[in-house]
Structures are given as structure tokens and as C-alpha cells.
Amino acid sequence: MSSGVHSDPADWTDPRHQRGLAAEEQAIRYLQSRGWDVLAHRFRAGRIELDLVARRGHLVAFIEVKARRGTAFGTPFEAVTGAKRREMVKAARVWMDRHGRPADVYRFDCIAMLDNKLEHLEDAFRPGWR
Image (cartoon, rainbow, N blue to C red; front, side, top):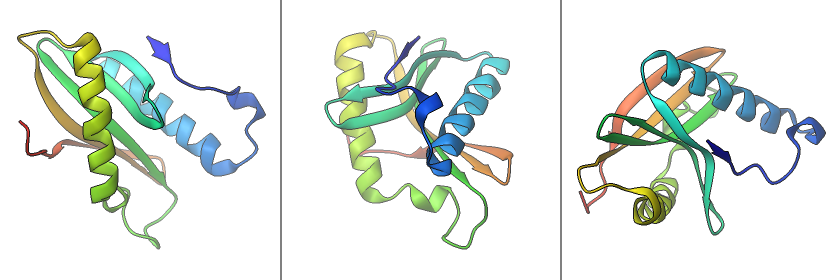
């Protein structure tokens, strides 16, 4: 599994970054416990990043992980805006070109961490190219 982290997370002082990394690590453990192979953590395509890419058989999920301490600024799922979805699709295309297999089926998931409770929204959205 390749990590695209460009700086040492131990040096991060912003609690949001630390919380985001902790949520991603918790999401990885959750997915692995359900039979997923996590192929990439923070896969980069230029300036765009996919939090996680995971495979279970022929199914490949591109996963955005969102952590929130509360819903004052909306739910974690609401934070995955149209612009974020378009970025995810662009990065997914790069991943597919580099690593995809002919029989693969793709979907976009979101994992929300809200007050340390994990929720996995499978097939969170469908881009027009499916």
C-alpha cells in the first residue's frame, strides 16, 4: 500500500489534520475487518487526492473519509460537495488507467467519522461515466 503523505504526520500541529489522518487510519482498519484490501492511502493525481482506494474481488471503491466533531457545519456526508465529487472522479480515472483491471467494477463511497462513530455510505454517488 502506497501512502501519498508528503510530510511527516508527526509534525502536523493542526488538530483537523491530525483528526483527518486518525479517521483515515480507523477507516482502513474498518475496511480490512470487512475483507477489503486497501490498495492506496492518499493516492495523488496531480493536486487531487483520493483518501482511500480499496478492493474486494472485482469491486474497487474510491473512498472519501470525512471527520467531524459535530454537525454544526453540516454532516460529514454533506461536506462531499459537487466539486469534491468531480475531483474524486478525475483522480479515479488516473487510478483506473494505472491500476485498473478489465473485469473491475467501480464505485464511490464515503466514510464519515462523527464524534468517533464510523458510518460507511456505499455507492454514495454515481458519476455520469459509469
